[in-house]
Image 1 (cartoon, rainbow, N blue to C red):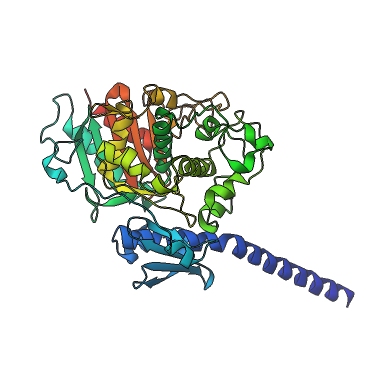
Image 2: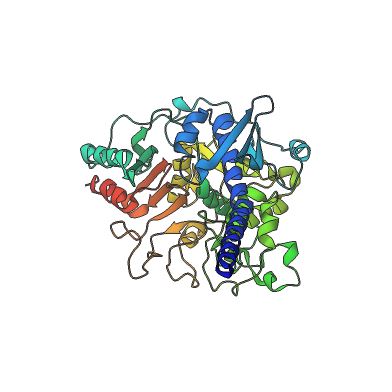
Length: 458
């Protein structure tokens, strides 16, 4: 009898612990699944004009994203996502702003926000030669082996990961300033805006460069974050934020609940959330890749240029000046652009931005960034043992899995690149006169791809 009671109690305790574990997981994980799904589905439908079935099959098919279910409201251009009816998250679409998750602020408050967005120039880009327009040359330089280059691109479009397609959507190879190869997956073309994910961080860095050139910011000074005054965090410089050495206790992991999933999918003011995180390391001493740092930078940009000019600033002071007119930055519920993650543009405009850095911040005779900005952007700080990150750009340093090995052993050391979740990349290789783009759903074998592209150039 005692033994039976012991067994029953043990089973009861185990069942209770299992239920508690499920509740905890649901409480922490489900909101991230719903938030991710609602935001990305809303952007895909209302901004990219894609079929929801395609989005579910390609973008939201992996576990646990596949647990999400969706309700669409065409009347107010919104998507509500949930997991088994729990943890509902709503994203609304606003023209010119993309999709925004409703968190911490009411939907009425978010919809009442005013953004003074600039009108895009009425220009027929098809009649203007690349890179100032979209008219590309028909021939390629004699030193490029077109057969080898085509094979390199074909390999990427056919590549699989764990026997599943990586869904490469676009590849563009730009040599010596000119597009020499370009391919799109069915349903995508040169006019399709695509999600850059963390490539957005590089655009944020460029905006800081513009403000530094204008004398409005000093990256070596303490970061102007009001909450940090009088605390140990006031030692954090803008340079520390750019180089991901702020020392803030932040985790950038998408496979489990972490700082980044909380910030992106459960917070209305993402920069404010990131700014409240405790200091784990002395600023400047420890590299920790963090979208939180980048969103703090974006709020600094907002405070620096002022509310009246903030919404237009990225466009009038950067994107439009490099003839990249398709860019769209999505704000959080507080109205600050989510510069860590949510930028949309055509593949060609992403390449234009890569060329902008390839040309050292000079565009059509106009030096938009400080003359040494790009050079300084590709130097890793002392606090980064991998030497693989500069000013919101990745560098061809050492592998984070094995520091004794190079990250890209078959690619020149001078390569630096913009990198986004799922393998959104623009690689800039000055010594080879290359700017190469690949966009897709899952990462590819980047070293192999770039090696094959380089081999096509004699």
